[in-house]
Length: 449
Picture 1: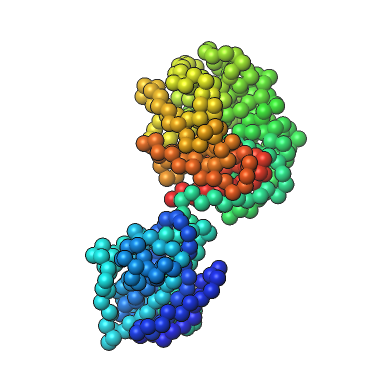
Picture 2: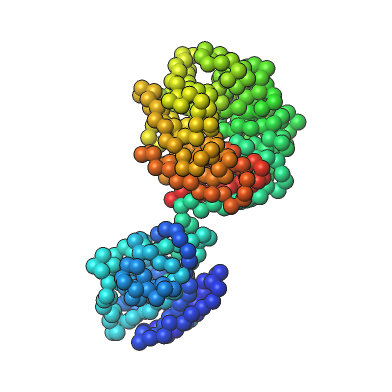
């Protein structure tokens, strides 16, 4: 067996040596607390005389729930000089201590005993992980140059990270840009912000910005922005070049979406109309023929059939690209449908701010199903399809981010900053969901997988 060597895991509060009949190579503490995740064990620079590596895991309570309290031991058969990665899934652990031993061919690999059959050699074994992600690095030769074993723990789903804005600006709408960044509108500062997936910010100003709120990536690769107090729609390149176009009526606009027809579509609540904007700035206005003129459309989203679906206080509307309207009343008439987005299931999902529901409307026939939220008066607002196949939404007064599965199971994740007023939400290019905190003046990220 290789002799004991160096332990290295950044962030560990202390190091513990495990002494026994097997010589210790290295050890360190793993994550603590609740959560689930899949750890991956990687092997690099393994000496040629190593036949296998045994990784031991001991929970802080003296054992694990999987094997009745005894030490969990996992044996990996590693070929000489092999670089391998194994996924460990299925074993719940808490404040854990890890150690590893390397065995040569002449020594032979010890038998792995005392474990259920499901946890035998090369079986999948699950760990409980925490936020932030941690890793355990074990050096078999006592230095970083020989025999490195790394155990990596991902951030559990539902972990929220917040990034404070450089300057307060009341961020509202947010969208994933064509450049791999997230872009957002700062309503009170009259700015457009950009955040990279590593948290780096940039901000852009223009004299024509007047309470920007909604934002979307257009079919032309530009950012398109609605303005609450201006009749002009804003187009902005990722390089910061602005252009402004008159947006149909003299009213401000709210929701925005790129259509499958290569145009940009916006809602105008006060004017009770929907505008189609060509990327060259030519606009066409469609007046909504139902509902109160004082209760105009809010959110808007493109469906797989090419039509545009939008929210009104008591109904969901559908608009074809040639101007044909249909209306579908909500089961909860006073629900106040707000945000809407196409889901991975091909249907439209929407929020009901006062109804405290998440709704689903079938593209095929307009059938609506409502799913009540767990938290009363949560104020669901913006909604987006997540990269995990679920739908994610903001709870403005509940101060949480919600997730609903295609079958209607709802989970809520609290935001660390109190009364942050989460507003916009969008799926990011990194596989996470990103959101704005209007009064918290932060951009948030929540893990999905």
